[in-house]
Length: 259
Image: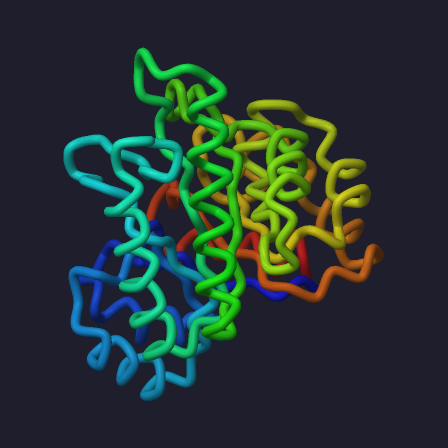
C-alpha cells in the first residue's frame, strides 16, 4: 500500500491550521506536508509534529507574494537575491522541522523576458539551492504544474523538468511528480512514472476534473496505486486535493482504492 501523507494546506480546513496536525494524526496519517511554514513559529510547528508523532515530509521554498498571485520566483531574473535569501530561510525551517526535502516552485514566466534568460535564471538558482540544501542534508525538488490552473507557469511538463535536472547536473535535484497536474498537461501517467522513477522523490495526488479526492474523476487510481507499488516506489504520496465535502468524510477512498 502506498505511503500517504496529508497536505495540511488543502486538507482539514475545518479547523485552524495549527490544529490540523492533530486532525491528521487522528485520521491515521503518519506524515504531513504543506505549502509554506513561514507564517508560523518553527518551534511551535516542530512541537506539533513531535506531539502527534508526525513526519514533516515536504514544504516549499519561499515563493514570493502568494496572496498577490505570485507562484514562485525561481525563473525571475530580477529576484535572484530574494531567491537566495529564501533558500537560507527554508533551510532554517526544514532543519527545525526535520524535513528532508523542499520543493522549488519555478513561478509564472514574467512577460517580456527572453526564454533563454528565464532558463539561465532558473538553472542558476537551482544550482545554488541544490548545493546549499545538500550541505544541510536536504533534497531539492522541482514540480511541473499545469497551465490551466496557473497560466504561464514556467515549468509545466515532465520532460522539461528532466531536461532541467540534467542541465543543472546536481545529484541533489529530483522530480516532484504531481499526478493531477500531469494528467491535465500530458496524461501517460503510468509509463511516465515508470520511466522516471529513479528521479522521483515525491508524488502528489488529486483527481481530475475538480481536483477532489481520488475516485471522484477520470484517473483510475486503484490501478495506478497498484502500479506504483509494483514499481517499488517507497517515497511518500502527498494528498493535495480539495475535499468534495469534509476531509474526514472523504477519506474512504484510502481503503477503497489503496487498501
